[in-house]
Image (cartoon, one colour):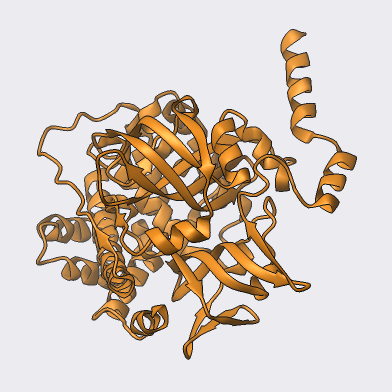
Length: 463
């Protein structure tokens, strides 16, 4: 059944997709040398961007912004209009691909709630972010030097002081770190042009007053049973985030909902692999449910319109054992998906949970009913038991269907036959520590890096 749907998905390309990406590419290439040094071809590329949104409500503002930018007199508002046009094009592409995916899966989705018009008060801290982002756009990636990169530090510190601006603080800090890592940019062979343009545009829009943050939408409180499907683990040098995709059986509701639970923590770059779970110790109930593959009974948890649950470990308790594969098979077909927040509408952010079976795997490609789907195996986390070998031997798979220049599948859990025995591996299996004896022995031999760091930090605080 899913093979037929997969064929429909892979054989479908939204009308105008290539043309829209060409317009976005033109804008991104103008950012390489900078808006202050636009040649005739780069100025023409921005005018094409304005033309692409001319029939939308953005049209007049973007047309003015492009002309002001072309003559070197762009203001913060003009740059925000350019970033908005670029984001709108990518949002339209996201919506078209998500509609195709929902149709292929037979998945119903709620619409994003309308935001009431109003006067949005600008946070004073945002002005510093807009100033830094304006300088980036004017000088371009090739013109960025150490002084400009380091000038982001006071802005990041100010943004961190207020919870409402911390999302922007992370973006600005991350972009500055990436710029610094590739210095000197004037002579760098290759630049991540699309990625940096994405970060710049998102940060610039977040620095404007408005209802951009999903947290700004009103949350409802929910109670019921949470059934985990699979776990994403995002590891970085200074942070780790765990995202649990789950089905919510809400008290008094007949239809289950697809939701996400995200928890994260700061860390140092020496904490890697299975040790990253230890920095999430403030969520023992959630971690135990993942490791033991149990349902969770939740009470009065805030649920955002985006489908994200604000996690409070003290409002949850472990329930009965719940097999994620049984949950996926029984619950995914009729589950109601949540809408996507405006600034999250970007093709690369597509990540929809699916269950696949009856396939074969050759190398890094899954074959099903004559169709081929690339596997994103380079994203398998080192903090879980899932390996390329287990994926290759698998007969059932829970994963996330996403887009990165083409549809691909990111495995979250597999059932496989190894030495004539059926085994299961889930990304969250090591939430309470590695279950593989070899990994556990190596961990014991190397010591507990988190405990050592905490002891040293405590010693410094006492001195």
